[in-house]
Length: 391
Image (cartoon, rainbow, N blue to C red; front, side, top):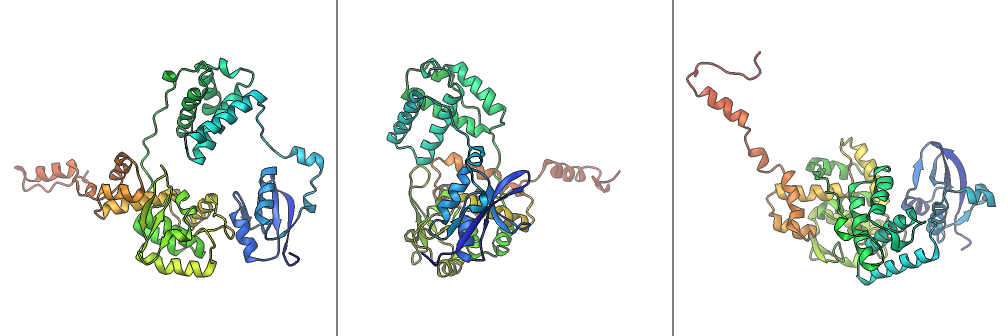
């Protein structure tokens, strides 16, 4: 305990916002811990890891570093007034509303929805009730739903997917609490945007892996692409889930509570062995600190940086690598049914989107313009050398 290093937390102003700076002498373990904290950033100017100055982030720093270092907060100057001034959003719900929300949370758990769905649905309904906090829950009607969407979703420019999620949460809530005046038939989810997925070329993926110097980051990128993993599947992957001899690993309780097997790419094995020897993970294959999962925000952060270094013109996310995996399989002649199984899609319609971005067959279709020009050349004007580019 006495040999643990010390970190100093300091308050400074950067980009018009107060920040909590994390200061310590060079220590590889402490650097890895700092990297794993959600929203943490390295600032080359002040040479500090830092996060926005909030009570939540201060608690995160305490939680992540508690087993690795003594935390000196003297430089923060946290007096009573300063603590109160730190930004913190709270809903002003009465006891009756809190009880209803708590019971709704239990109801969703009883229906065996995933933890993320339970959390998101409960938060969505909590925001809705808080918006109409002066109204009794039994008096809420469809017009109240419209007002909430108009004043919150539209003004804040929230995505259609978030609005669809809110409607889904509300449909379950009025089944749970039948006292409201909200009618299910009038709750309509807006149509999804039919946006084609962003896909990298095979060369771009290889360049992304090759130019990523950090061994852990390189392993993560290679894993995401080689098996088309979702980010949640990657961070939940345990060492025991990998079978080197069979060159495969099992993805447990993925989306829809389904298990599936995924192949281990031949060229991934040396990289994976190197990573295992270097980092010696305890429980999860990719860990932030020993025995704890790596954060999804950290993956998104370094992936964005790696894409910038490769000068890729598209926004690269973990899901971009999954889209690229599926598209490249299709272009290499793998059938949709097999791709559906490898990706863990419940419906073939979900996999069908990749037929719109795969270049195989589509590039072989000749444009009517080319056919028309060739037909024209074969007509009576055989001697005429027709060029579409001529003036």
